Structure formats: C-alpha cells, structure tokens
Image (tube, rainbow, N blue to C red; front, side, top):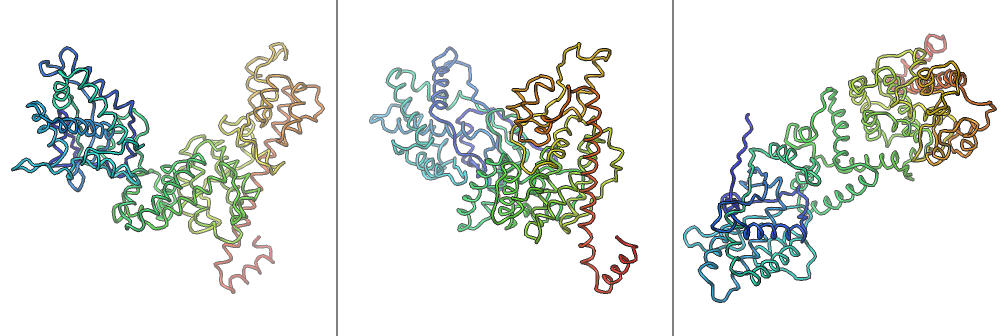
Length: 598
C-alpha cells in the first residue's frame, strides 16, 4: 500500500481552524511541554519584529515561516502531533493571551471585535449556527502520561486564568506572553492590531500530514535535529498504559519511572532493554532468523497487535535485565542471588564485556532470564559463560565480523530456553591452529585476551580505567636495535607477547620508558600479571623476549579455552542422563565401567 503524505502551506488561523473537524492532540508517548520563557520571548520578538519590518503588517506581501508540524490522523479522527508540539502549544497560549487581553477592553473597537471573532474558532469549537463559543471544547489537548500539566493547559485555554505563582511551563509561558503583549500594547498601540493580524494570517506553518503513525515517525526522524527524538519505548509506554485498567495505571507509571532511572544508572536505556528482551522473546518463539526485525515492528506484530507488550511479566523481566547489567557494569551484589558474588561468573562477564560487538549479550540475557532461579545456577552460569567466551573469541580471531557468529548465536538462543547446558552448534575449530592468531590478534580482541590471561592469576576485577601497555614502547629510539628495520620492530611491538593490562594512572607515569625504568610502576599495579613483571631479571626487554612470551601466552590461552570446553562438555552429561529411564541409566553405567563411554 502506497504511503500518503499531505503538505499544504497554511496560516496559523487556517491550520488551527482545521481542529474543528480533527482536534489536535499531544499523544501519551510525547515528553512534557518543555519550552520556557526564553523560547516564547524569542517567538514573540520574532513575530513583532516581522510585523514592524518592511513587508510585514497588513500592507506587505511577505510572510513569516514558523516551521513544520508533523502529524497523522489517528483512529479517533484526531490530528496526533508527532513533531511540533512545542510550537503549536505555544501558539495556542499566545492566542489565548491575546484573546484574554482583548476581552478585557471595556469599550471594544471594531478591530478588537474582529480579532476576537477570528481567534475564537481557532481555539475552541463554536456553534455553526449561532457562533457561540464552547470554551470547554478546546481544539488542543495534551495526553502526555503522568503529567499534571495536561489539566493546567486545559484550564488556561478554557478560562484564561492561571496561578501567578505556578512553576509549570504552561503557566509561566502564558503569564510571560500576557506581559509581552501588554507591554507592546502600551509602547506601540498603533501596531498591536497589525501584530495580531500577522500572527493569524501571515505567520505560516507547513503541516505535514501522514497516513499512518509509522510514516509520521519516519518523517519526524528525518526532519528532527533538535534534542532527543521520540523513541520506540515512548510509544510502547503509551500502548501499555492505555491497555491497563484505571487501578493499574498509577503503579505502571511508577514502575516505568523507576525502570528508566535504574537503566540510566547502569548505562542502559529503556529502549535498549526492549531490544534485549526482543531476543529473549524470539528465542522463546523459536525464531532464529538472521534478519533482525525493527524493534517497533517486532512488538507491534504477533497474532494480536502489540500483544507482546501486554504480557503481564514484561515489565518485571525488564527489571531482571537491569539487575543483570547492574552486576556487569557496576559490580553490584545481591544477597538473594549468590552468583553476584561468584568470582568465576564475575570474571567471565568482565571478559565478555570486552568482546567487540553486542552479540554476546543476547545469549547471556536469555540464560539469566530463563535459568536464574534454578539450583546451582552460579556453577551452571559460569560454565556456560566460559564456553561462550571460547566460541566467540575463537570465531573472532579467525573472522572479526558480526556475521561470523550471528546465525550461531541465534540458534544458541533458542537452545538456551530449554536447557542449562544448551548445544553450541558452532563450527568446530582446532585450538592448536590458533596460535598465530593469538600472537598477532585483531586489535579489538586484545583486551579480551589480556583479561583471560589476567584472571587466571587473580579474582579481583580490573579497575574501571585501564589501558593496554606495550612493554617495549611503541615509540623507540631508532638506534635501539641495529640492523633491524622499523617495519619488523613495529610489527613485533603489536604482538600479544608485548602487551599487558595496566591501570591508566600508572601507565601515564610509566610513559614510553624502557623496561627497566617501567618496572617500578609495574610493581604498583593491582593486576597480577602486570605486577609480576616487576620482578623479572632482564637486562632489558627486546624482540627475543617478545617472541618467547608470545609462545608462552598463546599456549596458556589455548590451555584455558580447552579446559573451559572440557568442563562444559562434562557438565552437560548429567542433563543427558536425567532424561533416561532407570534401565537406560544402568546400561549407561555398565558401558562406563567397560570403558566404552566416558
């Protein structure tokens, strides 16, 4: 079906009067009205300057462009504002301020009566026969969630009165506009009706009306370069809210606010939480298609529209995901979850956090959501994480792209839902063949490799700020090595055997010094493999030392990965046996005794 977009240049009066047939609404998913006094001052000043300029007023041919309004007609026949709520709301407040001022004139001139009659159908529904105004039937309403300003705006537009001590933006801006209009009326009374004429008839808006919400949001995303764009989570919030009963709505708003704050505190966003949860739902639904759907399209789908958003466990599960990230990103501990103090789990998560893309996160989230309440979870989680590290790292060393693991991860996600020892259907790799890739790894894999080495020697997690230290410096004196080309040295310097994890503050002090000079700084490090370098009795550190350490660290990493692989394979045996009958288990035990099965 073709997309339909209507674009018709209109005056403020023409645009607002369309609200008689299709009222304007600021939808639930929009953020509260944010313009302050500075913005409305600018709006007023610009319109006044245009009025008094050559070409402005009633006699000129010029127009003043106020910008665009993006909307679509929703199922209730309303013009749902996607972009431009600040502008259109401020115009309603400005016209209400002008109307209130004109109404207070004791002996109204013909001009005053004329503009009163023009403003009324722009703000309120009027009787088609008598022209009588229904001040309660306003052509603009705000439905922004959990926003007391909605009622304040309604009261201002209906009565023209607000509390002079109020702190909300609607009240402050309305009072400001009243003040500005009154001052202009006193200082230049001859121009005041010219000004009203300009506001209604020569201030031009470009309304862009789309046929659907999706189209309107796409247009908005293309046009918007001011502040934060609407997120899919804003729309999800409104959909869930409208689906709830009156009694449930307050609790939901409080939960959403708490979730938003917690997510921000751990460096995530609600939008991202919904994205993570999409992969969990896809796993539950056994969807391993490598094409990742758009997040809004995914939640909009299902047998019934938006049914995935209406699941009662949705918000609680988003809180669970936040808890996981509070452990990963902030190292929080929870008394009711022993795994949060398990050093093997914490180290494994920290290693994974150095993986160069986000695909490690999806199976980890799914495993935690699915199995967190099972007995011996910490041990199961640890083994699963180690296996995941091994598979992801080895694939990345050979092919450092997302596509190298994408299909394997999506298949793994589905497996996780039904087992604490899910099948890793990754293409087997001979670890012994990876020595060269480990010694000269892709630069994005270095941090992961260094953490694997370091955490064999310590349980304490790395400090937040650490850097990759080159033992032999990247900047060396050209006469340091005789008869060796700079190209050879440059290549050797980037080998893993020449690298250490090092606290940033200590690395700054160590600078580009040579080995003997840096050893005293190594001694201060809380990272075990780095501090151990301080005791090595080398005359200095050269290319032969790099080559020797290359062999040692590559062998060590391969041994660690092989151990993790073996531990996972062993851990999965009880799950196989649990599905056997007593007769089958007896037969399996007999085969073990005969040496036919390990």
